[in-house]
Image (cartoon, rainbow, N blue to C red; front, side, top):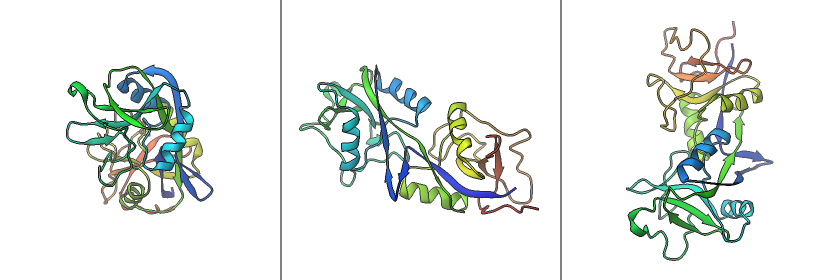
Length: 242
């Protein structure tokens, strides 16, 4: 069976030649953790904002004066992190849109971030119920690459190889495919996705993973017909079709 090393990227889609995030405002107040759980189940994750243009697009989805909405930035006690991709937030080089005198961590309990109705950010107590914003959709990059090359490309251009957290996400992905594609799971006893999150959901084909053959098959691909997964060597670019 031929295997193309195309891959999915969470949270982005391609419009013409431009790469654009699509945001969804959810007016159903939840805590930050509750909002992230909802976004991961229905979309991909809480919103990541990496430029002024993305902040404006996100703002257009949250036009409710007087309201604040959770985004994916949080304080892991050492530094600010985004929930998607590698998560890194560099105060010197990353895009930010803090309100004046923010973040201020009043009471030492404000570890999550909201965006207000004019587009500025502030830190908030994560257990506060707020509306929130989720990005959505996947993009298929139809180019033959090894798993490592595909992941590096994805990290440099977007977020990461796709993480499939539940059957709903798996069913969203496989109808879009015309051939087998890389996903973010690789052998570490198959316990982690490439974005370091735990692989709690798995959809292996019967007898998979089997790690058969002379070359260790340490990466996972999704079958475009059934939506089930199989393992392949990470340096595979195209399998022998005999």
